[in-house]
Length: 339
Ligand SMILES: CC(C)(COP(=O)(O)OP(=O)(O)OC[C@H]1O[C@@H](n2cnc3c(N)ncnc32)[C@H](O)[C@@H]1OP(=O)(O)O)[C@@H](O)C(=O)NCCC(=O)NCCS
Image (cartoon, rainbow, N blue to C red; front, side, top):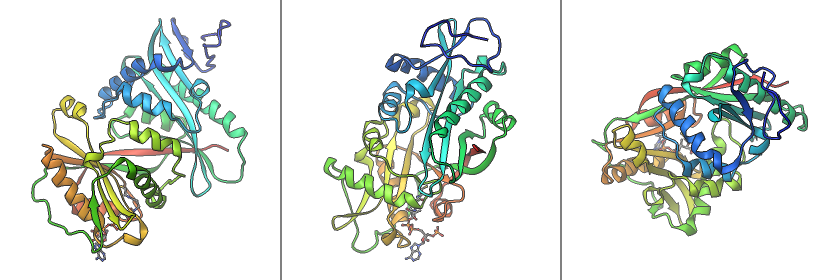
């Protein structure tokens, strides 16, 4: 078992397998970002997840963490000085009062099957128990994590540790941008270019609409800054509908050139699809999605993609199917009671 040799940097992990050269340590700040990017990208390749991480996006996330102190809440696995995996925990107060204690642990494919990730997962669980000890009881509290249906190593570990699937998210693709329906905007609503002075209102409107989404939580201000620093913040592609000076709804499109060249495709994302309650069921989301297809096509894209809660209570799944999207992958949210 690795031991703490007096350095504050090392973490003692009681469930660690005995592997010569393996140590666990704390987060060392931005110096860790490149190694984190490597672990994410190599894991994604092995797990057939078409997403490419970058230092820019990792930095944006870690600059604005909410209810997470990376120096206490992260763990790094190192083999002879090289990072081979890392994990993190945080917690979220849901709008319905429940608290989820969220965590993940990633490990390079070559090191899997030796008990290293199980040790990290259990360490994360102990850390979350400690955090939860200071929180009020009474409301539902659970551990929460997620897996794509292609992340078979992680999924079997979660099941073995007592996690149960509670909800599914579908990744959907519209495989072409042909036959785009001509759908008018509802009366009194117009689309305007997104300018910096609008960002706050757009952000707040999305936060309000997404309170009707499964698992909703408060829209935290730190996230407003993070949102603007991410590579997928492409306001020139946004389709934001206004009714006077009120934001009625939006589709916040983005294109990742990096991913498109990596996966040899021309995909644009139609994301953050949301309409505030007074403007719902008037065809606004459909019209904004159709306009988004046109904008993505003008930018040279040949397909569109999004993610949707499989049981979306506003009927979004049906809406997207009607707009030509098809499910290509399933992601599962797993939970385990904390108390
Ligand atoms: C999901 C959401 C964006 C839909 O917005 P919307 O503007 O109400 O959607 P639309 O009006 O375009 O379409 C919704 C349904 O209303 C129907 N509809 C459209 N015009 C209508 C009208 N004039 N009268 C009655 N129904 C109408 C549509 O046919 C559609 O039904 P369908 O799914 O069977 O095709 C909105 O409910 C929302 O913001 N929900 C909360 C956030 C969320 O879950 N977002 C999705 C994230 S993936």
